[in-house]
Length: 528
Image (cartoon, rainbow, N blue to C red; front, side, top):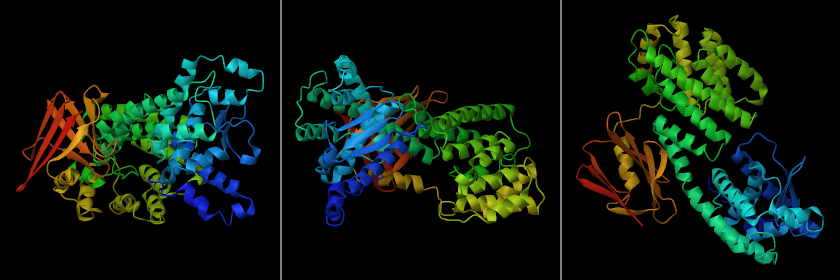
């Protein structure tokens, strides 16, 4: 999400009406608080965020810049002068502000009890002497950790914070006339280098997040899970737990026959294909039943951890209701919906209420509830498919679990597809669009990132630090190697067939040649 607003521009616009009334700091507070709230949401932690305190220039005493103040009632402070320094970055002013606030929030969420920024402020009290005895290496480690976490979640919130950090540090030191070699604190150059190192680390994690998101969208749920599970090693956010759980549920969903699980769930991307491609045989192989139970058990644990991180995270709670429906426990699902209650009036909540009723055999009630849902472009597919299902079950007196239900549902979907425009050539067109031009060349930015035992991501660099990546997964069972090429605009799966050739040479060069009609598109990447 791009942040179009620019602090310096906004301050200029309101100069006559706000500052002229002596309330300039109040306006700056609202801007800073808005960025702060977005960062808190991105961190996705259930703990109550520290109070945000904006310190006007006229109230500044100790020149703290910004600080996390721990204690029974933790506070994160930002001085107006620090805010003003951020405005010098023009179109990147919000990124600069997010960099400062994200760093301090990271100290809080990483449970850094007393930070060096704070000890400098307390120079006039006795505890400062003890704080300054903290080893410089330990201080630098905490600052680096805060940079790393702050950069990552800043990106999740939609801000590009890691590029701006070195210059921002220097400008803050200049504006505050700070000694670059403060006693008892890492030097300015050490802090700049720590920020650079954190950027390198984050740039090896962001492609994993992007890959997980893209793989999920094209239905590669096992590979998507590997990505989100890999991220949990460093970033245990509610979103990563939730995303990993949804991947597990999608995998399990494909192990159901239509007559067993005919509902179209809010997270489902291609319901019609799932229904159409199922065999609808009588009975379900025992191994499928056991496998999906294992997947759903894993999903349940991940969702419970997501909710533990943030008890108010409605998305994870709704996904947990889906998990319980898939585990054949609609009563538990209804219990969670009742717990959510009036705090959620979304179409997702209402469709899950109707699905639970249908699962319990109350088709008429389910249909009445579904008919009262306001449909928009986001909800149309899911609500419409479920309404068709509820009507079918009611009209033909069918029950979930009967073979006939699957047969009738496939017939219904064949004549009432919500997405008739889908076609088989879409992927090849996407590959050409992704390559964009014949003979395009990019550079391999670093060695491959190992996401799991058999999956690697090779990051590609052109004009930006991250212009795209090649994902490679080796399925040892059938010796199949699959490649996925993606950039900021497109995500393309490359099938092993006669339409293209892929070569991979010792991480030094990747060549993809795509033959499409009379055109010959090629993609080449070289290692630095």
